[in-house]
Image 1 (cartoon, rainbow, N blue to C red):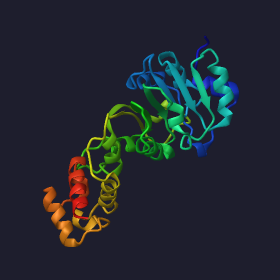
Image 2 (cartoon, rainbow, N blue to C red):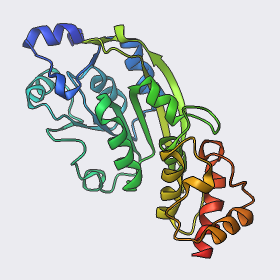
Image 3 (cartoon, rainbow, N blue to C red):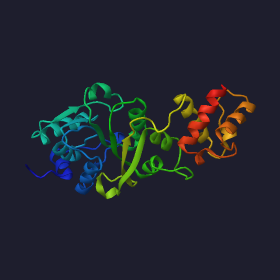
Length: 278
């Protein structure tokens, strides 16, 4: 099998990068190996890969996984992938927008589903939100994303990076930073550092709440105006001021605190007490 090198393949096919698609292809093989190891891919796994590019990561996934389904939006890359990965019989290629794919249909009866992606930065949050909130049965999501977003996802209460995205991900997953990735590891080079982060899906959400929609409305309100105290930020509770204060008291939470100081468990407690008084 000929040596598989990202730069050589791009040159061989005269591939032109499309800026609007946020295409940055990995050229550092050590990162490819770290992603596959971080995702803990084995022969019993069905891997869904988002954004295979010219197949540098795909090739390593195909060697380890039982089956790989790669979703690529750029139709120019499909023939390149078919040609370069022709020796593998465990690959399925889908030329679609990853935000529009029916993942439930794709997963079918598969039990060991893992998602792996080198995501364009503009797609990071919408993809994470879609995959988590639409409740697909996968075990983990290992992604290469902008460093700042990875730090937000992995943040603990009290820090500047902690926010509604941190809480959304931590409601569904355990998070683990796999490694940092510098711009030199890509072609073309992005202007920012990246990180590989692994999101391991919990068997059930981290907190059990009476009303999930209300929980995330309260979280969103609390971070919309970060400098506001909770008593001023939580507006959509449909409670009188008096009852809202009562809910804070029942939950054992000081209404003068700010949203970024609350853990997911405290938000859940507050949400349930507000629900009780509605």
